[in-house]
Image: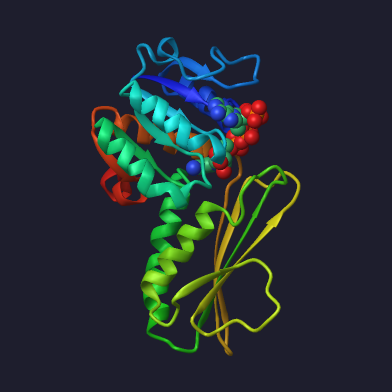
Length: 247
Ligand SMILES: NC(=O)c1ccc[n+]([C@@H]2O[C@H](COP(=O)([O-])OP(=O)(O)OC[C@H]3O[C@@H](n4cnc5c(N)ncnc54)[C@H](OP(=O)(O)O)[C@@H]3O)[C@@H](O)[C@H]2O)c1
C-alpha cells in the first residue's frame, strides 16, 4: 500500500515512522511550511501512485483538503479533529466523488476498546438512578480544539446509554448543572498526549474509568490499520462503527 501524509506535524511524523515499521510506502508528504515535506499543497503529482491519503493537519484545512483529494479520487483516512459540524457536507463530497472515507477523533485501538468499556458501563449505570456521570480530558498546550473530539464521542456514548442524560454541557459554567446535562471539561497544559476520564458518582461511591495515551504511536497504528481497511472500499465510515469487525 502507498500512502500520502497531509500535515507533517506531531502526528504526520509519527505516521511516517510507524508506516516504515509496518512496511507501508509513503509516496508524498504534504505540508505548507515543513521543509521535510515533498509538496506544499495537494497537487496531481503528489497524488500519483497513492492508494490512501492520511490527513492529520488542521481543522480549518479539512474541507478544502477533502475537496481536493476527492477530486483526484483518492481514499481518505481523516485523523484531524474539530470539523464535525461539517460532517454532512464532507459526506456529500465523498459520495459525489465515489471515494472511500474513514474518520475518527481517536484512532488509538486502546481508546476504541475504552469506548466499548464506557458503553457497557453506561448501560449498567442507566439502571441505577443515583449515579451522575461526567467526562474530563487533558491535552498538551498546542492542541487547537477543546473539548477533544474523543471527549465528545465519549459524551455521545453516555447520552445514548443513560436515558436521564439528554445533552452535553462544555467548559465552565456559572450555575448549577441540570440533572439531564452531562458536564464535559478540558484542561490544556504542557506535553500531555491525551487523558480521558469518565466518572460515575453517587452519594455512596465513585467509579472512574481512565484512558491515558503514553505517546502518539497508538494513534498512528490505528490510522494505518484504517488505511489498509479503506484502501479498496467506497463510502463514508467512522472508525468506531467498523472497529468490532477489525478484531
Ligand atoms: N484522530 C486521532 O487519533 C488523533 C490523534 C492525535 C491528534 N489528532 C488531530 O490531528 C490533528 C493534527 O495534530 P498534530 O498534533 O499532529 O498537530 P500539529 O503538530 O500542529 O501538526 C499539524 C500540521 O499540519 C500542518 N498543516 C496546517 N494546514 C495544513 C494544510 N492545509 N495542508 C497540510 N498541512 C497543513 C501544520 O502546519 P503549520 O504548523 O504550518 O500550520 C502542521 O505541520 C489535530 O486536529 C489533532 O486534534 C487526531
